[in-house]
Image 1 (cartoon, rainbow, N blue to C red):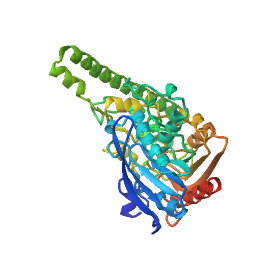
Image 2 (cartoon, one colour):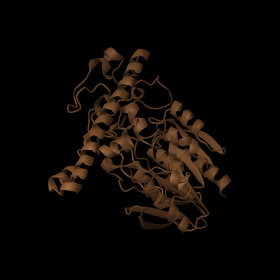
Image 3 (cartoon, one colour):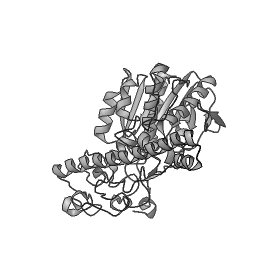
Image 4 (tube, rainbow, N blue to C red):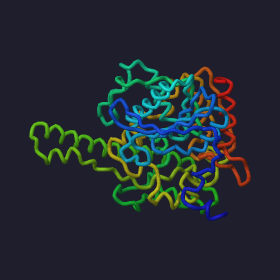
Amino acid sequence: MSESTQRLGAGRYIDAAQAPDTAVTSVHELATADGAKVSGVLRVVPGAHTVVALMHPRQDLTHHVLVPELLARGFAVWTQGTRSVNNDIALVHEQALLDAAAGQVFLRERGFDHVVTLGHSGGGTLFAFYHQQAGLPPGERLTHTPAGRPIDLAGAEMPRPDAAIFMAPHPGQGALLLRLIDPSVVDESDPLSTDPDLNPFDPANGFAEPPHSSSYSPEFITRYRQAQRDRIARLDTVARQRVDEAADARRRYKSTSDPGDRRAALAPRVLTVYRTDADLRFVDLSLNPNERPYGSLFGRRPDLTNYGLVGFGRFSTPDAWLSTWSGLSSNADFLRCAPTVTAPTLFVELTGDQACFPDDAKTVCDALGSTDKTHVRVAGTHFGGPIHDGAPTGASLAAADIGAWLATRFP
């Protein structure tokens, strides 16, 4: 195996096709309903009447691998960031909905006949959440974040998209972390603290030296998953305590005008969450099997990357933890939002996915509320890489299905 395929994060970046020479690119700054600024890139080819909007709550999708593929098939493409792009320490999903709404309003104003959302990975849950809230009467939309902060979705224009495409959508940042977090951590201030009875990388519990697949007993899996929920619940408690402390300081400041109270209200007290790359399915390929390679989204050695700097939800404000990373508190849960997605829907499952496993894909796809629903499977890994060297990329195979599906509905 080459050094390039063993490096940290290998498989995340896929070489893209060449965009058509006729594509015209423009960059736009948008104002959200609550006064934030977000930016996006619009690419248009001659004759394009349908635009596909790609968005992710945490990542910059300007150069997403599907962009040139969609342009080559005659569709305009809009790639947009949130106010927290590439720096998700303060990512609140309810605010990200206002960011998405600004993009949807902009595309309607540009005069496209059809606007289609395309959510890849975490973008899938973001757009499912958007479809849910956009489909409600303004007065029935969420009014507060999970941390209790007011959010004015009722006052925002939230156009309903004409269709939805989901490619390798995991079940939500919080639902994903609920399976990723290492429950053997016994001291949240010590990244090496470990309960040996829950250690996923101890041979006594079923771990095998990589790249050999581990084998965990049903009893261990049950204990492990319950312990994962218990750790999330403990972190939720800490987050809510810190939210309450800040709220108390704000109340004191209103009556005292004491700068010390103001400082206490502003201090974010960021949560540091160690070891979040420990899904048993990464190393035991017999669990919910598919064509995935051994390892996680972050590398071939979860027993090592779990202890490193990378990983989901490692640093977050209490508000962001509860809104985005807590599988027990977040509103941004794909399965919960799926029944409200009633527009024509295409669900693209990748057969070697390491985040949207077969059971997840079936459960979520079955829950989608559209009566015009198509579920396709293509060979590829989560980020759209090939199943094996020399094979077509999952992204190119997905693009063919996406293009054909769009062409039949929006010719």
